[in-house]
Image (cartoon, rainbow over all chains, first blue to last red; front, side, top):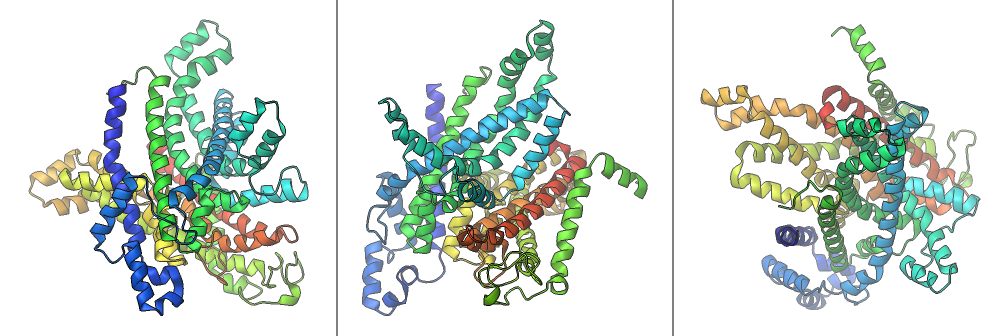
Length: 328
Length: 279
């Protein structure tokens, strides 16, 4: 197992190098003069100023030298400085990343709980009304523009009937959970009430996919011999479903969950914009609008690294679910 | 297959093709006949009638500039359909070519191309698209390009996989045995046999491409004012959610219905042509 983890980490090196090169190239192949684009016409009118900015950002060097410098800095955890705030990109992202992870993880919980439950039940009661409703609901969920669904939720449950707050992040969830141990529940309620609408908005399309996948995977497993054996032993249907069938049916679902996490991280960019959620997604959009290229580059790089890390974790969890998986 | 038999097959076994197809046909007809059906020009302003819900002459009400939302949605259908077709076309063409080359030639070329695809897959699709548009600048053309490029790896993997299995077939071996050049074998014998799954995935991806493009417009990277693009309309509408929720509701509904049409159609097509792709 330990050896496998090391080997997987070694395999990650070319992927991470490739991602860094791709992000670097996308940001540096911008048509036009990046300095003029970043600072507008005022700077373009002053050639001396342009030159000094170019020198400071290293843009006067050949492309491969710039990339090697970028890579060297990246290895030291230095992603440069934001052009607008002059803060380091890492500190800007570090301040926002917890909010995004909180949103993405909560959305994942929504996707897993709703998706797996709906999938298992519609497989157990195949061709029932519930199965039919879930199948149609899953197709609807996959077609729903999340930003529209979010706005409609916001309109009905925050504006018209003010059950939840309209937007923003109430309180960091992790801190709120820690405060519960000190007997304070108000912060948790505040954090949760702000989190519900964005998490549901982001998580439901994934829940639709998970439900479809769980259903078909369960149907396949329920036809296996060991399920028949379990039933003929006289086990309760609930035990057969959850102890015998679900555990095996979940393996393909887990693979997709890893990929879905990337989808959630990407989708968070748009959901954060709908609910004014102060995460890296909104930071990316602000950075793009302000042409703050180092900040855009750093954000994309960090989100890609988080995604690569999550997929590694997913691969490692296979063995916990399925002892037949050998780490070779 | 007789026409009657095909009809019976579609209605009894593959109703999704029928439902999705009807929705799509309606959207396409509405898009084509937009100039005939639209009561107003999509950019004509009438500030006296701004933010009205359904009112005379404006079946779906007006936006903040008093523009007819119904007319804008009709014209927006043209943009969304175009985005779907162009983005999927770019993705399927480039991805298909990469997959074909990797599968046919193998060796170093295959390793390099497929590792490149792995790298692209390591960046979440919509984020890759956002990064590309951020570099190229906002606008619908760049959005189509970005959404297309970000879907390249999935086509490349699909086609490569199909090529690898087709390559082992007897008819390919036979063609090689009589001395046909590799390029000829790829074009005449392999390509036609890997097209079915590509078509199925392309039809399923059409909806996602429209969703992604509308999302990019929603965050301000796509269509610029006053283009009647659904995502951009929705984005403007959110500012008036309290006083005029209809401004955001209808464009969203239009996206939803169109994407659903593509998803139903694509799903049905998959079940009909290539059930192995089913997840």
